[in-house]
Length: 84
Image (tube, rainbow, N blue to C red; front, top):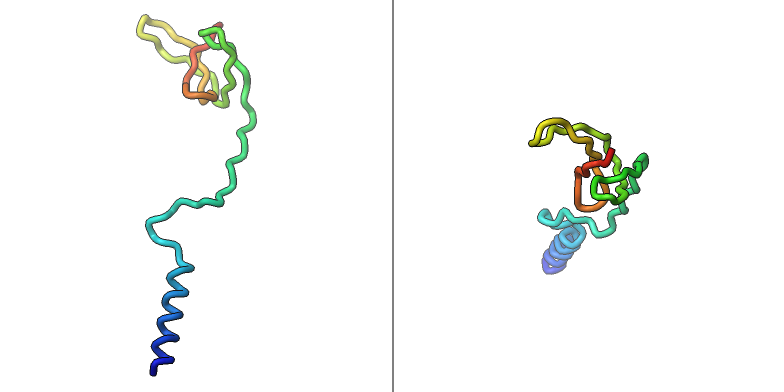
């Protein structure tokens, strides 16, 4: 009887160690994302060169008219005004 109880307990503990906890969805051995391809360099309105992956768009400005911007750029700015 003791052997049967020990066998059941050992199987229960072995199974619980192998199963991931339901709260942890973070994978520590995830492969890094491949670099995006197809970007292009643009001349920003600030005078700097920026590398962007998205299309160039025209957005309305508060003073009236349209401004040419590049989208999905590297760094902390998703939209960068471009110099014509």
